[in-house]
Length: 164
Image 1 (tube, rainbow, N blue to C red):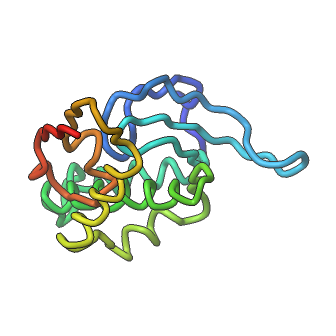
Image 2 (image 1 turned 45 degrees about the horizontal axis):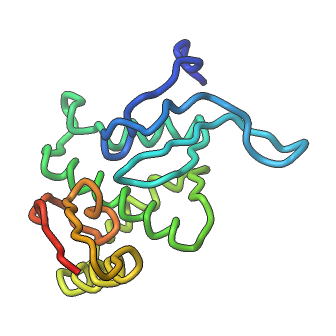
């Protein structure tokens, strides 16, 4: 069931809790005759993704389980789940299509609990640098802009300065 405030714009990413580039409004997605309600999120950390309205309720519930009394989840576990979800969205985005979350995908992604090893994170960072860095200018980047792309669960990657 869609909540009473479903028409209100969402200004914060349900995954990373970053401020969205533009508010996510409830709209219709799908093909003619098979439309479904959902929201398109444009997050600086997770990228652009679409979530079915019912799946959005699941997403918010799973990622905020640490705030529910009686649910045995620590804030550290919740932070890891957010990182797993954000990295999964960035991996899906790499195919060139906007990721779409429907039909229990959130639960499947969180059950897989996949984050890259440190070596894989290094390789992801180098791959990302190879696509965005040009010879000459200096770049500053940090966890908020790169963490989900490389698969880091925490901001151990703080601000970095890269002189090409």
